[in-house]
Structures are given as structure tokens and as C-alpha cells.
Length: 78
Picture 1 (tube, helix red, strand yellow):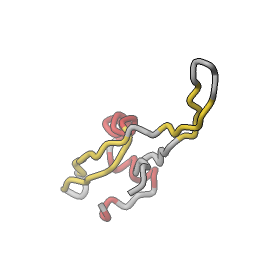
Picture 2 (picture 1 turned 60 degrees about the vertical axis):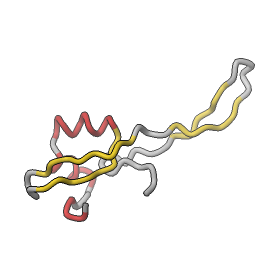
Picture 3 (picture 1 turned 45 degrees about the vertical axis):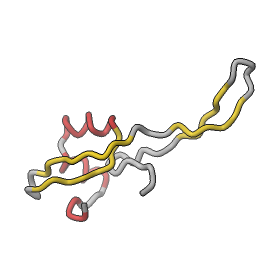
């Protein structure tokens, strides 16, 4: 599975690593992704998702059903 948040779609960002002498080299800034088991009340079961820590905080505020609907995800497949 690729390094993409399943709810928000966050993925790696291209950036530059800059040394003290200001030489630049390419680097990837990866999102902070975690495997998380989330209770889905409408489905009455646990759903295992690979989501970013930012999405975990938003999930606690909005709820799983609302975030999945925004992302266009069918939770029955997880």
C-alpha cells in the first residue's frame, strides 16, 4: 500500500534538504501516517485505516461517517 492517507489523501511533498553551505539536494517529506482501528457505529464494527495524525484529530471532531462521505470512501470495503 502506498503512503497516502485514506481519509484526507495526504501524500509525500517534494522538498529540498539545504546544508550549512547551502548546497541543495532533493528529499521527500512524508506524511505522519498511522494504522488506526476506528469504531464505526453505523456499521457496528471496527474499521482499520491508514490515516495521518492530522486526520485522527479531525476524526475525533467530525466522526468517521462524515469524513468518509467527504472523501468518497465506502467503509464496507475496509
